[in-house]
Image (cartoon, rainbow, N blue to C red):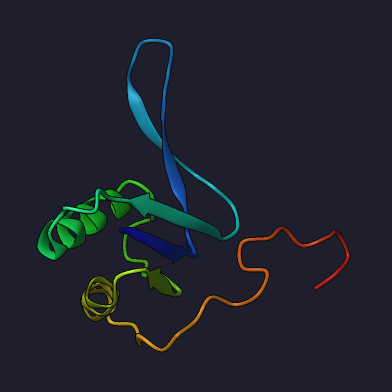
Amino acid sequence: MQVFIGNPKPMEIVFDSYGHQYFVIMGGQTTTRLVYPDDISIEDATLATIDAMKYHMQERSIPDWIESDNKVLHRTLCKYYGIKATVKRPGGYGMMQEEGKS
């Protein structure tokens, strides 16, 4: 089972030379992919996704879109984040724009 999330405000955890962790804000959009074992329950996959996104997406932001190979998981995550399940990934999402083009 897998989930793809359109992440409009990505961030990542980095560690300094002393082992302290901190978040770094990344520019642009990214697609966050989460893969789960086939035998994981929908409930566990939902909770794991929500928890993981706390470390990949800035606070107070919501995904632009969500895709999954499991329809129930897809609907559950869309409902949680308050986005329409019919929203699809735009072509070129997360691709860097060439300088001078919009």
